[in-house]
Image (cartoon, rainbow, N blue to C red; front, top):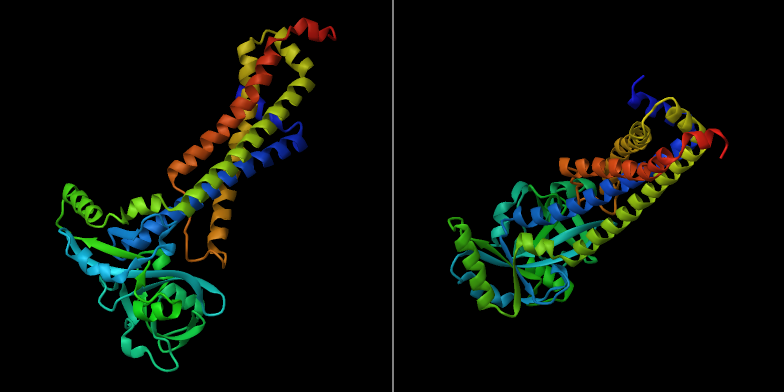
Length: 378
């Protein structure tokens, strides 16, 4: 039998201890994969939500905690549109709210001629118009197809938004996950229902397509110079600096780090106890001619086997947990986990590192003891 086979067989001699340690590794790797996959998914969803509607640059209130708490005067949009390099600009009023009975969604208010409307593909009906507003209906609303499915509504139905009725004028599709689970309405109708007359949460900008990277940077610099009291950010930068995302990233790293550290201590404890119980066996191996290096490799292979198996199972559990969270009613429509090859390689590397580090100290200690003394009962 090979050294690797002996290491694997040794783990089966103590099934309960091996199983509990394996469970610790599984939970640590699952937490790492699920949390980091969800955070990367949130970041990707936010970037996609802007790019899917053709937004290159976002102007928000300087110092605002996030886009939704920003307040920007709608009247600035004409000045923004006149800046060199800007192809189109539009005020945007965003709000996270309940649509229908208990479905949370992201609602966007735009003018009827906003460039973002052109990025959405109408599959049924049309976008809202001012004439949709009546004495009994606050206005028209166009739903993403996935949101319409979740609400089980269609064109002509009424949905409750901001504690009042809106008529569904159409259904649209888009590349963005959040957009597909979102809704569009006219900014003036949204302002009336949220008591924000003349206000937007941001001014979104589409730069000219023929600009080179240097010219795009120059256009953004001109916007920053023209509007020093506003925060001017490319969409990628805005998402990376989004405070809630940064908090989520920190929490994900903290939780996964604690889980990994706990798993490493569990492996260390298991290997230390195993070595202590097998002092006689290890002494016999040394007495029959096994070099110390081979004994160390055997014990480290046991730790590696344990954590490789735990990593494989942990990855599967982490992927399942991430998608369960993403499909839960409270989260559905806002994130799709991003679990790519880089994340999986890191997970395996962390798991293997846990096994090798946890087994190294007990292995060195066991190999350094005198076999004759152990066999004499000392």
